[in-house]
Image (cartoon, rainbow over all chains, first blue to last red; front, side):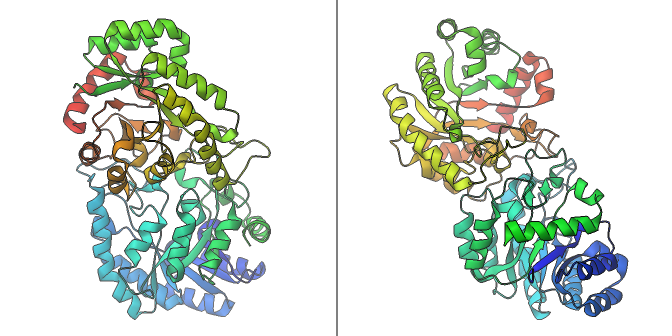
Length: 275
Length: 275
């Protein structure tokens, strides 16, 4: 249990203070913080809350959405917040095609040029990576499942994320391995090995079958879906990752449930299925 | 227009006779036949219908679902049917995890062992490929979008399909390039080039954004989604493919529409967007 982290989105209706207290109550040693709740709490208060609790911050979620070309200032703020909070990394969901809002219909004049959108991500990273490095924060590029390519992330595989990260020093840019996004990839084991010290975060949750109507909410509690966690965890370990393991679940039923029960189940499933 | 093919699923409520007449009426020179409608028509009658029409058969859809380990006899029948019809290839949707029915909840005792399921596909192909080759039919391995990995196809990328195909003679096993399934892949252009003479079928339709509640029906008419067809068609051409280009759309609105109007729109979009 000493590497388990509650990603705050799993208990989304809890405030940051609630989530910190919940982790302490359930003896979960780390938390992945979301910016929405961080802003509701206020940065200074959040820093004190976390410090007083003794929890580690495993990540700040999230920066990114770089493909619109207007996100640099907000990403600099996110990096500053991560540094203040002591988060080792800022998770980056890099954005989809320009003009395609997440979960919505494309806007008039949206772009279908996927290679150009990917190029934009690389260009924005070249600006942000040194800024992050100076503040001791690592940008953690998250490959999202290919079904989110149009509207959320034009980084669609772990191999592609590592390719992109390798243009930067290892302490400035890493990658996220999230079981939901990568479990299907025929190259996943070789790319985890290749990622090695680039792995900045390991996130776990299950792939629900069938997917719900809103595919964003297809993430499930470990054991409720089809993913075989053991080999993925073993590969991440073998690659040298020794950081926290975050449980991040987007799921309407879990959001509606009693968060304390969710944490109890999460610890149980983590113990039996992930570790 | 001399390479356009109507995949029968696009006008799903048409019988085979209706679809053949529709193609002739709209001067579409080829048809991709589905086994359901073929069986409703009867094989002998279907062979005569197609021969009398002067249409080419671009493919028979579909064989596969090899991961349950019980599908060999049905696949041999499908190969026989393709040979009788004069279809150059049998499209293979290889199946998902054993015990996970398409679009449904996993059965009790289903398998989470994805590498083993992939191994089963290779083993079944080793049995079926020579049988197909003897009958002049090519097995066309279709990588499906990774969101169908659990329940429909454990072949999730074009590169993986080519890897698998390369164990067999080029005339026995090829691959399908379907824009809907591969458009997101950062390796798609290099893998199309690598596939070369392995490309047995090129299928087109668009990726709808956002996806509908049933993700199987997220395929749209070209131009209604986010895919940039020009570069994909150019890559397939550059790889040496000179066969038919099938339009295959799973979409509730298109199935509900007047099939003659669908064919008119299809020809128009094909002319302006695909070629």
